[in-house]
Amino acid sequence: MKEAIKTRLGSLISELTPDFKGDILIETPENKEHGDYATNIAFVLSKVLKKSPQEIAENLAAELTKRKIPDFLKIEANDGFINFFLSDQHLYVELGKILSAKGGSAYGRKKKTLNKIHLDFISANPTGPLTMGNGRGGFYGDALANILETQGNKVFREYYVNDRGEQILTLGRSIKLATSDKGHVTSDEENLYKGEYINKLAGKISKKLNESETGQKAAALILKTYLKPAIKKAGIKFDAWFSEKSLYKGKEYGNIMGGLMRKDLIYEKDGATWFKTTQLGDSEDRVLIKKTGDETYFMSDILYHFDKIKTRKFNKAIDIWGADHHGYAPRLKAALKAIDIQEDKLDIIISQLVRLVKNGKEVKISKRAGNFITLEELINEVGFDAARFFFLMYSLNTHMDFNLTLAKERSQKNPVYYAQYAHARISSILRKVKAKKKGGLKLLKEKEELNLIKKLAEFPELLSDISKNYEVHRLPRYALELAGRFHNFYEKHRVINEDKKIMAARLSLVAATKIVLASALNLLGIKAPEKM
Picture 1 (tube, one colour):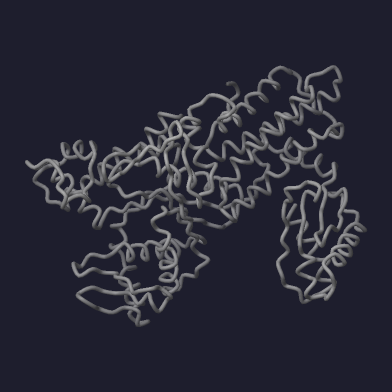
Picture 2 (cartoon, rainbow, N blue to C red):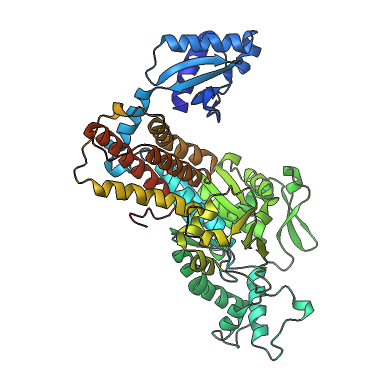
C-alpha cells in the first residue's frame, strides 16, 4: 500500500511541480486517529510551492478524494500531514487474497528475479565450539535469507572459514601445550585457547606435527566435530563453506596487487607491504603483507569480496559481523572502492553483544578462558524455538540480555509460547468444524475483526520493508502483535455460533490468521504447532 500511495501522490505532485525530485515518505502512525498511513510530503513541497504545509495537504487530499480510490475510506489533511484511512472493502480484498493464495504460502511473496545476493554470516573462527553469542548472528542471517527469498531474490548462504593466519597458529600452540609435560598455561601464554575441548583435540592429533600443522588439523576437526553439528542443530543451512586458504590459489591475488600498484596505493616499509588507506579516508595506512610474508585479515577480506562480487558476480553481498568489527567496515568499503567495487554492492550489519541473564543476574562467559556456553548447550537448555525467537526479537544494533529464566517458562509470559499458543488455539478451532464453508467476508464488521484483518494485511509490506532495511526483529514482533489481535478478537466474539453465515465469515478470518501466523513463524525458522 505504501508504494501505491507513493505512485498516486507522485503522479499528482508531478502535475503541480514537474521538476520535483524529492522522496515521498509514507509512515504508519502509532495513533490510529491519524490514519493507517500518513505522509509529511506537504512540508517538503512547502519550500518549493511557497505555500503553507496545511494548504498543500488540503489540496492534495481533496484531489485524491475526488478520484474515489476504493482502497480508502477517507483521505484528510491534519496539521500539514496527509492521513489515509483504509476502507473495509480494501480489507476484504486482502483477506480474500490470503484465503485464495495456494496454501497461504504465496501471500506476501513476489515473483523470482535475477537478483543474486551473497549472505555471509556466523563465520566464527574454527578455533572452538560455537558460543551462545554466535547464535545471534546465526539465527538472524538464517531468517534474513528466508525473508529475502520471499521477495524473489536468489540468496546464497556461505560460511567463511578462517583456516589460515595467526589464530590457527595460536590454536596449534594451545594444543601442543596441552600435550606437553608442562600441561598448563603460564602468564606469558594467557592468550592461548583453553577449555576441555582443547584437551580432547590434543588426544586426537599426532604430537609429531609442528604448531602450524597441528593448528590446521585441529581447525578441520573443530569444523567437523563442533561447528557443523551445532549449526545443523540450530536449523541453519549453508550452501557452501568457503576456505580462506583458497583465496591465494588463483590469479585474483596477483591481479589485485598489480592493480593497487598501478594506482600507486602500495608501498614497502619495515619489511611489510602497506596499503595507502589514508588516501581513502582511513586514519592510518594498513598492512596487507606482514614482514613474515603472511597476508593479513585485511588482505584476505579484500580478496574474498572481490571473489564474491567480481568473480562470482553477485549483485549484492551482505556480511553479518560481530561488535568488534564496527570500525573495520568503512575501511573495507574504501578498499573495495579502490578495486572498482562500488559501496552499494556491500552491506555490512554489525551484531551487538549478548549477555546471558539467569534469575536477574548476569552469567559471565569467556571463550578464551574456556568458560563459555555453547550454542548447542543453550538450545538444549531452553529449546530450539525459544533460542531462535529470543535472539530474533531484538534489533541487531542493540545490546541484548538473553533471559534464560523466561525462555524456559511454559506460559504466555514467554513470547514464543504466546505466539505458538495462538496458532495452536486457531488449529483447535478449525478442527472442531468439519465443513469449512467460505463465508461472506463483508459480514465482518466488528472493530476487533477489522483490526485483525488490518494486521494480516500488513504482512506483505512488512516482508518488503525487511528485505530493504534488514530489520528482522520486526517479524517476531509482528507475530506477537498478530497473536495479540487474534486473542482479543476470539475473547470478545464467538466463532462457532448459531448464525451460520457469521460463523462461516469468522472461520474464514480464523483460517486466514492461521495462514499468515504460520508463514511468519516459518520464516523465523520456528514451528507453528497444531497442538500445545
